[in-house]
Image (cartoon, rainbow, N blue to C red):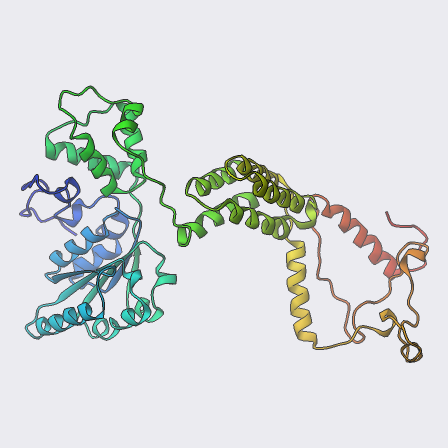
Length: 442
């Protein structure tokens, strides 16, 4: 993409009656900050614009990263009529009007870019209504969503669109927005260095929210002394972190906690735990996931792990927040620092596959109880050896179905307590091969 030298300056016209975020909305794609990975000359959207052919796309990204602005500028750059809709307030009737108008424009050679904000809020039937118009080129669809399109959009619609992931604005991009705001208004923000850094942190990657904070600060008298961090906190209010307990952020953070514990990093695990608690996650949900982790990722490598998690769950139910959260944190640190093994998890999966493939093979007769004379007469229990009474405490008898070869499902690691189990299994295997050995296992 090349910048048009005749295009209007970013600050050529300023209507002070409009919100600052709207006044600073870029008028050229080159002025969009933080999204060079999709808009740059060698990036996917940049190449489409160079070729003069725009495909239907889904812009997936967090609030305030520029989705609406990009859609408007794409329409301008490709000479398409811009038709905006919000899935929150629109229905099938609104879509029909847009499709009818787009069809008429197409007859005179004018294309239409239909921008649908929060497209994930349309139901499946509404999403299906796009398909014929996207497929025959009546509209170029640009949908914006904060939710994972894989979960929220129809597969048929996704197959007709390219999905581009937009990033939350980094510190450099946010500072650029502050600089532009100061340039446009002719004022320097009344904050010291520490407060300026805190302001960027408060924005949490959201450019629109940052400019709203800047606008609040610019209402202070020009002669005001620079605010420190404490003074900034009194003037502007920090919003709650972006975290929807029923959407993807919920699953992303629990996944991060799970993987940090699996990776034996207690510090990262505590960070993700704090992020979830700060976002309002139910501590009991976290406690349940810790119990699962103890069984799945640690198991017999540290048999105490599951007891630690159950105790944390119990403590939280007795104490509630915030005191009970410390018990959950203790369990997180315990799990993160415990030896890891998925040997039991793998063993069960292997056994399940074998069970499904072996049908209804009965147990061998010698390990069946014989409570009646008839059952004893047909061989139930015949030849069974009671292991505790053998010389080694191990009989080595077969416990698999007759006709089924012995298989190894559980393969312990050498981590934690499992190395002791591994030693026992090796000794028992030697006894199976040589039942006359006299040495007793430990």
